[in-house]
Length: 443
Image 1 (cartoon, helix red, strand yellow):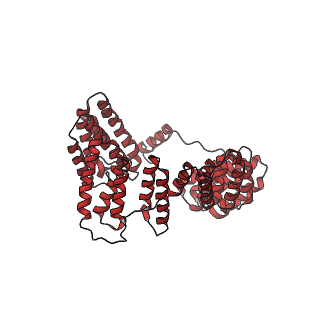
Image 2 (image 1 turned 90 degrees about the vertical axis):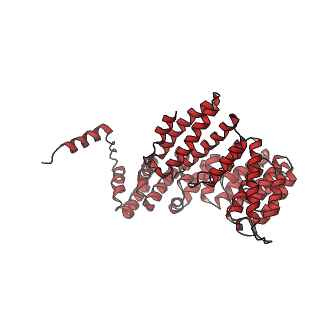
Image 3 (image 1 turned 30 degrees about the vertical axis):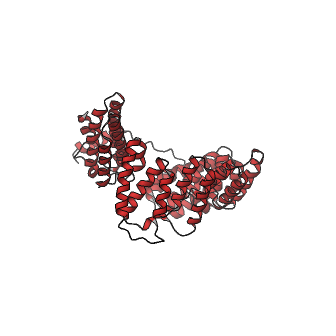
C-alpha cells in the first residue's frame, strides 16, 4: 500500500493545472483502498497510511498547480478520514486533538483553512470537548490582551482573537450550544451572521418566537453599516419561514412578495409560491410574471423557463432589442433557447444569435466554437421559419463588425455558404502525417 501512495503522489514531478483533476482522482482511488481497511477492522494500519498520505500531500503542494483547489479539498477529506480512523482504533483523544491543532497552526498552504467546519462533524463528543477547551484557552489568552471599546466589532479584533472566536462559533453551532454562543456574542459583539446562526439554533429546538427575535435583530444590524463577510443574506428567507411556522402565513407571503419585487428570480419566485394557497396559485403566478417582466429580463426568462411559459416568453423576446439579449449570460438564455426552439423558432433564433454575438463581441477566441454553434442553430431556425432576411441581416452585421477575427470568420463563412463542416482528422491520420514530416528530409 505504501508503494501505491508513493506511485500516486509521484513526488518530484510537477502536475499542471490541466492534469490536476486526474491526479487527484488517482489519489482518491488510493484513499478508497485505505478507507476499506477501516471498514475491515484494520483501523490502526489505516491510521499509519493516512499519516503518510497527509504528509505526502503537503510534500506535493509545491509540485502542483492547484488553482482549482482539488488537492486542498482532497486533503480535507483525507484529514477527516484520518481522525475517524484514530477514533475507531481507540487512540488517545487528547493526542488526536493536539495533532489537529498542530496541523492547523503549521498550515503553510492553506489546506487547513476553516477545516474546523468538517472536523467538528467527525470528532466524537469527548474529542469535541477537548477541542473546544483548547480553542477556548487560546481565545481567552488572545482576548485578554485586547483593549476594549464599547463599539468594537468582531472584525476589528486581532487575528488570533478572530481566528479562535470563529472556531468556537463553529463548535457551538455543531453542538447546538445556544447559551455558549450567546455568551460569546455578549463578550465580543454580535454580527448579522451571528443572528442568523442563533436563530437557526432556536429554530432547530422549535423555539420559533425566539428565533424570529434574533432574525429581527440581525435585520436591524444589517442597516447599521457594511458588515463585509459577516453580513447575512439568509435572514429574510429565514424570517419568512419562521412567520409561516408561527401561523402568520399572510405576513410571510407579504414579506416574500416584497423580496420578489426587489429581486425577481427563479429562487424568489419559488419561495413566494410555496406560501401561496392552492386556490390563488394562478393569480400569484400571473402577478409575479408581470412584475418580473417589468423589472429584470434575466429574472423573467428564468421564471418562464421554470414554469414553461413559452408563449409569454416568445412574445417578450420578440419585443425587445437584440442588444438587451446580448448583455445576458448564457446561464440565463441557453435553456430558454432550447425550450423555445420547438414551437417558437423565431424567438429561439433571436436568442441563439444574441448568444453568438455576445461571445464574438467579447473577442474570447477560445469560445468561438460555441459562438459558431449558436449561429448554426440560428441559421437553421430562421430558414425553417422562412425569415431569411433576418439571417442575412445577422450575417451583414457579423461581417461588418468582426471580419478581422480571422480565427472565427472563416468558419462562420462556411455556415453562411452551407458548406459541410470538415471533420477533424483522426489521431492516426495526424500522427502518421507528423511521422512523415519528422522522418522526411526536405527537398
